[in-house]
Length: 311
Image (cartoon, rainbow, N blue to C red; front, side, top):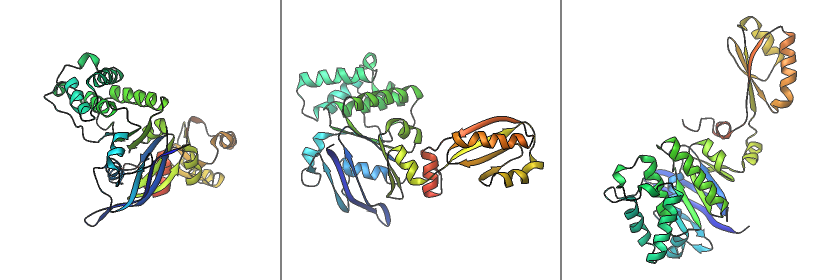
């Protein structure tokens, strides 16, 4: 696979704060890459440098072989940017906004008109194209913002927290659009602090915290890297206070015990659960419910940093 985006040793300071600490990563053509981390981790700074809004203190970026510092114009032609803040003119209609933003890419009138119609249809807003942006909901504004970044058919789409504060309908439509664009061959870089979005959309994920990439890989690779365990939660029909010590002795890997439930750490819940239930049955305890919590990105982040993703 060809590398389309190369980020090498990027560092950026704001006064005495190190926003980025010489991070490096590369992305292949047609890859959906997620940059996952809490607010303030360095995600937006990274996107702003790649999209030429910020200059790094150290390091370089290459887009499709072009050095961002030496050849910014060629780099800009290849990227579509969806910033965290919505950039639209409220007094103009959706169509007029797209006409304005598309004009900046110097597309011919016919090509631009075709692209506007295509993107409005893609975003499900054709019927509202002549309505002023100020009449749109937050989710609809976000969809037009995405449409404006697609008009010049970019090779790479840079998306910075694109679903913050929008309604579920718009969020689902955006996911469907991104999955279709990815299927058609577009490379997408997606920052988020929502683990479920990264799990659904991304081929590969970089976990960033305090300006550093602390782990990177596919979901399976990250699971192996972090050594995070699954957990089995067993709820009982009655209080287990009188059996607490016996349960602790029987299951040394208990990580939590309450009045009527226990949580057990497990490397392989499917394999270990039958034996656990057999032991519990021998103690004459009646099980009310069993939950299996698989290893997800939240678990991995907690394992890597000692804190939750949204702390």
